[in-house]
Amino acid sequence: MSDESDSGLLKNLKEKIEEKLDQVTDMKDSMVDKIEDLKDSTEENVVIAKELASYQGNNMKSEGQFLKKIFQHKDMVFMKTDALAIVLRKLGGNEEFLDLVDKLTREGYRLVHQETIRNIPLGFGFNYPLGSLYFFQHVKYIGSMK
Image (cartoon, rainbow, N blue to C red):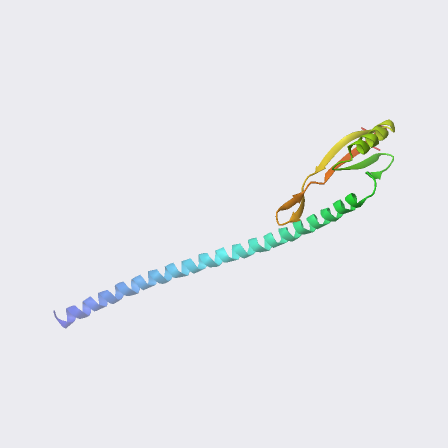
């Protein structure tokens, strides 16, 4: 082979190598851009997740404090007004609860809602069933918009 033919072959090989190098560089830049976009998106999601966790944690804490207040209340009647009575039925105490329901019914209150408090999270996956809240409304306020 002649020097000219070798020179042409080397020039052609150099051009192909530069072309492939440009393609690899473009692919690398594209991958870096995609990874940066994914990183940005992940960081945004982490911020949102932290905010939600904080919000839920605060709500659970507030709910837990309110339930603690209810369950530390001495009487079964947690709150009673002319229009509303909220009764706590802890596990057990069936006869006392039935006597109280009888008394409220005779006073003109009617059961309008019952909410079971089944699972209070204690951590480590444990839950504790506590009882139920019963909401009674006086009949003169049922259906009334006062």
